Length: 314
Image: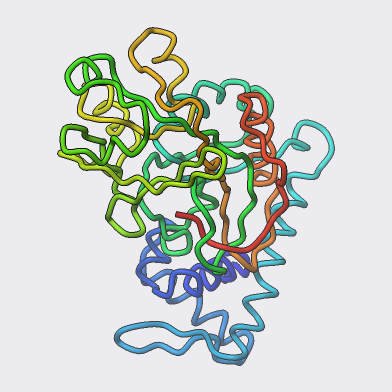
């Protein structure tokens, strides 16, 4: 029995709650994973997992052992990447999931610089606006916008995205240019709805101008659940958009979007990197998070606070 492989298999079964899911993420057969865990239990002479036909639960001894195992695995990873010479740079596969507009407009164009700095890190990037189960899907971290929802994950605030309200000239030519946000509730105006993954529904947007505070939802004929599709719908004249300004800059410069209600303010949208709890942060994940903080500061959206805190993001 390879003790390292056995500990990895045990940790993944605990995190995934399933031998089948653990086997998929480890690229092993279910039989191999089962045998590794059984051999580990035999060596330790203690039951680590309780198996039923429906699920796998960690025992009290298994929970204690798991905490030690994940620290040991992380220490081994850091030890390998902390050697002198060429191998001093962090290396290995990093699995991340990021919003589609952020990937297209900011992260992917900057990745050549990241790769030049850390040539031995392989990034497997999921690009979506869906809710990702970090544990089940064996993802190292997700980047998401929105307030923290619960305390199940660790998260670091990496940026405050400035928001604005925009519409295409074609839309304004048909519907008229609204002078006050309340006009978006009128029957002749339309917004593009964004379906948040957490609720599957559009949410109202908050604006304020001095002492006047409004919640605007508007009417839509189209709602989407992807940021790139949302922007495309606005450019096509399907309605008014609420956008992070990094998504609007180029289109404003080309005259494809017009800013509305510029004397009104919208609360910035916090941007977080979230990662699994109770797990040592590997060197490769640490440099990736720090790179995002640096990148977002360069784009003028750097956070006032970038300290780790617990919680889950949208």
